[in-house]
Length: 183
Image (cartoon, rainbow, N blue to C red):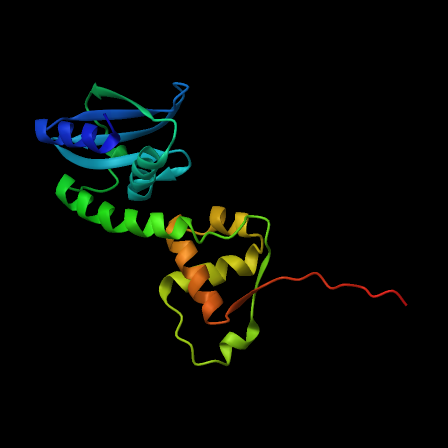
């Protein structure tokens, strides 16, 4: 049974407690908190909040090695309550985001490439959206694609979409090390 099915089952019961997420090697990698059938908090790997919940669901759907889940009834401390979401709303959000996630995974650039901001973007009349701004801001501090994905506060698929759009707008370019010609 997958994570979405486990969550749905617990929501339908009006469950209060937590769903522990384990790797296929039984290592604890995350947790989802529920109170009276509402999802109120989550942590998965280095992520927290709704981002963690979505990442856990996407990993469960995409992984060749399925995650394991342990459901534990317990009283949930308020410090674990980060948000309150109904299952139906979560499912609607996940469906749109998952399609974008799958499409963007084909477009993700290799991690070893270095990117730089094209300063001419300031002079152009191109409109930069919210996500593109965050990616540009991250590129100004971290030029390696691998680091951009790790440091940017956006979802992986949002970063990929922004990189594709910024490249199309000629706002970023691949850094080419200057070659020294022999004298």
